Length: 337
Image (cartoon, rainbow, N blue to C red; front, side, top):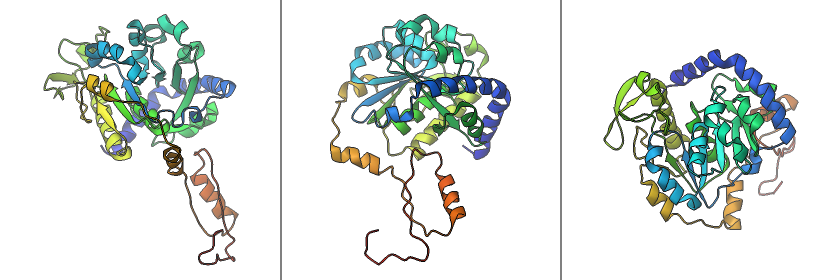
């Protein structure tokens, strides 16, 4: 995947949605400032457990009973369009993620909105405000950091400065947010088909005519079945593979969809859910997680301009500690400052 491809995707979205994103960002910013919820609320929340990430690909229809059977073996984070489907089948997710400004509240959420107490909504500051103003549970906002610097606009409008990498679609956002913040032991992906089979629905349990006019290309799925996909879905699948392999290579991801074009460590969902045992974190291991994320930089102090430039480099992380010695004071070899 080239930098130009990613940039073109970002510019196209920004050009199309700029005015709506600004309006939503202002509205959601008021909720963010009123409620005060932060990414820190979920920091290392998943240590010792596994997370089932659920998108809305047609494989969800095949595995919905498996999810019900093993519900107590995992936390569940689903995309916006999977929320109503899961609730319809008696499955209450722990987290719902919404990324888009136009995802329908009436189709995907409204019928279960009174049941959302106890469910955390993870929302883009630009997301559809019908979801955020009606949600009964906790809402944690984020701002997408992209390669055309739109985050500068939406941080200013919303007051939210909690960033995650922009990730091309809401299913990818689920993976990115929880991998970066929560540190689950492993991540299982279901409904991450990025395609649909002949005769199947584009969205699970939703007979949408999109399956007829979005057929940009044919593909051979991981299960050997012929399937259809679109330019956007193909781009998103390639983006997620690259992210998991390069940016998060130290974490465990398994594609349990059993279908589609995503080529990330395919495994059977029932096996993964059944075999996992929740474990307790030792104090030493927990401290290791925190210490591995401490950013430490040593440099000679040469004046306020240099100091400010170094501070600006780290301005979006939660906290910075700076220890420095004036340039004319040299530490004694072997001494501890």
